[in-house]
Image (cartoon, rainbow, N blue to C red; front, side):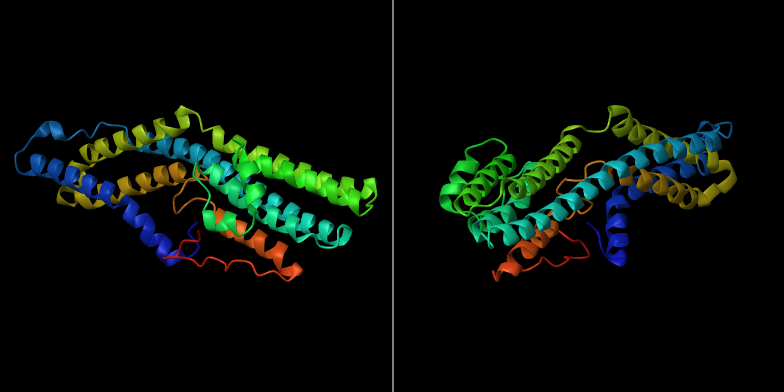
Length: 292
């Protein structure tokens, strides 16, 4: 996720630079054909370009709102997951006298979940330092590793509760936290596996490119040799709006615009291990203005 504005502006400009270059070359071709070679068909002043631009802006605004809603829901669910992991650490610490093996197992949970949401394998260094080889083998034998780890944690909580004589009502508090974590995971998986409809993901891109092609044809008679400047600036603004929606509609993708799931996972690890006197891995720092 971009966290520093200067670097963010540079990233956005870099992403739109290829589109800007193509638009400028097309605008230049239109103005040369019209001004130098007097190709009158290149001038289409009757095109309702203002009406088309207004309709496209509304279309992009609706799509971008839907994309941001997905992004923000994902961030909200990660916040809920963080709070429940902290509550789990506090409950385990007070009821089971710490139980560091439970804290380290829960610290591995967000790493497994983040990797699953991105369709990647988790970083072995994160998993090996938090899970025992036996527990790792059982968890990695399942297709949904994050859910399998919650299941193993639930079994361990029950086992320790029985050994230490914890009241069943108190144990149910921990079970409720595990259920809330499962609910948050289900919401994240729903976002991951349910893309925006094709009308929102494809049509805005097609409409934006078509608008940028037609724009210089309606402006060349009025702007003349300034057409590449005016048309390219307006066109690239619409391109940036379209790209913003495309970036936000996949909040878990491995891009600079995705949620900083590694940082969130490291925060959870820190909050779980430090109260037990254990040393967590260092927090990742922003790289070129992007928080991983």
